[in-house]
Image (tube, rainbow, N blue to C red; front, side):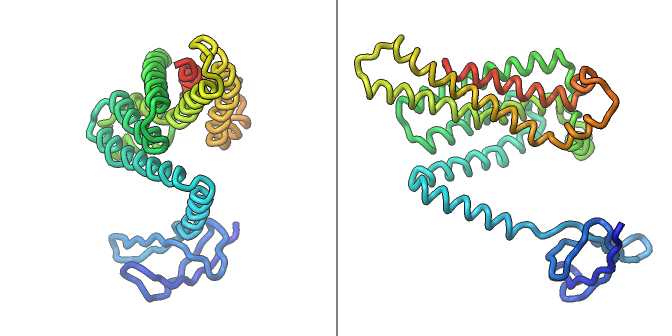
Length: 293
């Protein structure tokens, strides 16, 4: 282990403008690094200063600005509308869903209700008010309701507690055990599938509209069959996208389990793994239902 003797100039807080010294063995620091420090004064009045974290906000702002510039440059007004609807969706989750969950409201009902609002913001805010958007909203929300019911039944049968993640354990302590963490797991599943459901629903509705415009003589059955063929191709790629997204997030966990002596059957049975598998499977069911809807 490399142990560094660090001299840092403090910019904020009680010691602003002063230089402090401390030892560090967590990460390798370089001269000029912008960092955060953890300062603790114990009961005897002794000050303890340690490395806390790196300053990441400038890099984060840069990549966010690059994304915004590309979005507006490529999509123009439509891109701006999608950005506004995204911000509205995030605001709904932060200022409506989170307070409702912390206040003790039912996580599943709250998530379904907020999901409807988020879905409306995304679809109508991005694509405007037209028949295809109303159809996409109806198809998506119906798929959310059905998958929510399936997830509730299966999670209850699997006896999931919601304690599969470390964050849930800390949250349980922070709220004195007042939250329904199993319901919170369900709520997370419902909110998590909204993005891909929005994608496939608006695409399907647009396919039907364009097919109708290209050939006005197509009847209902022919339109449905042709659009379904497009939906099946789209569905395969989105199911892969959903699964790979969850696997990518869980990659350290997968590597950890690969080093154990447990059998694959026992690993799959553990809640931390079974919960993620439930997310993938239920999300895939939602995608499958959204296409015909």
